[in-house]
Image 1 (tube, rainbow, N blue to C red):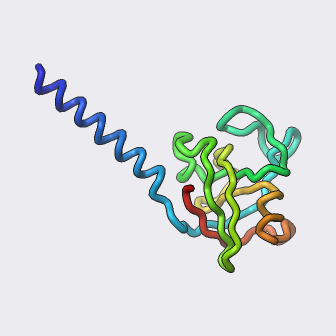
Image 2 (cartoon, rainbow, N blue to C red):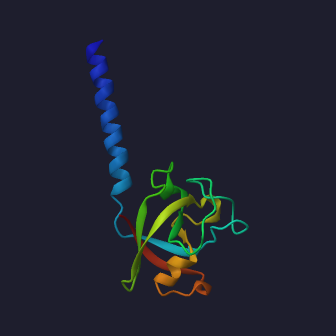
Length: 131
């Protein structure tokens, strides 16, 4: 019985380490960035992370489900870098689910402005990393 308990504890620790490493290993992952409205009455409902609407003047990001996962990145900052080198940090507040492509991050207008990009462009290639 004691050896079974040890195996379960060791297995639990390994799973926890794997999950925490998976959430922190992302560096310069290519993505397509689109613009998203996070306020009440804009695209979609409230943010998945906190059930709230947010001001589009904040640096916010909604991620494709495969990156958002089960919410491990909720409230965490990611770095978003244009291919020409300008970068900004934004907080993950939402899973864009069916509203995004598989390799898409959807950001507030403030992120676009900070990167010197016109939101009317529609989509731009970027790299993103966990901070």
